[in-house]
Image (cartoon, rainbow, N blue to C red; front, side, top):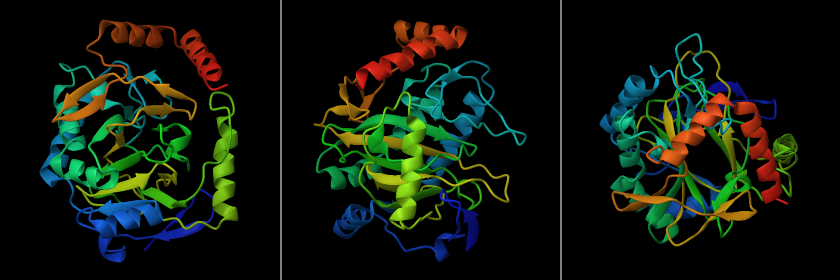
Length: 320
């Protein structure tokens, strides 16, 4: 077992390898679906092929790492250049790979969408939803950005709150000190907070909730091709890096049932700009094929201060 600090400041032991971990599942059957409903998450081993994972990693290395321009990032929801650490890892993860320019990032976009809509992944999500999934957000991680403990439903969900599901795809064997993905037991949303201006209050509430309810942290040992599915209300994040310079190359995807509308900030229905990939609907909010979106990216990168102030005020107005 591997010891590492938890979000509460306590030290926890997590499995070093899958052999030290729970047995988990090879597909989503009735038992696995019940496990997801009861525990708030489930691990499905080998849902992707290792060769598919390698293709995605290679495309990221070839197309994104040398790129000098601005791309949208998960942690800040802003357009940024690559932030590379001393070990050469990109530390600001990408958001919405489906929006990437289809010429400049052709391989990464195609291979990632193939993974998000792979028959094995779609079958697992159909077992959860009872219908086809609809992809509403995606991410790519290389270095560990140490994501804080949170619930997805606070930011995005299905219109039927709590029915969104998310998936974390390990693209390599994840070292226990490289920023393992963790989950806690299911818990209710933490209350009514102003996302745009009081986000820190929400983050502190979640940590206090973990402490007072004595929730158990689990950080499964995932190998390339393993996928962790979790519920929109499940508290989760990524642990800090400890004792290794390893990457944690991985994809994240958020899905809602195909027949559902997309809820943002638990306040308003967000219209979807949909394409289809392998027969699955995919939301492309800032598709770089569209001139309007390319111009917006240009303005964000040239005038970030005024642009993001206006965006924060718009979010505040929308969530009143």
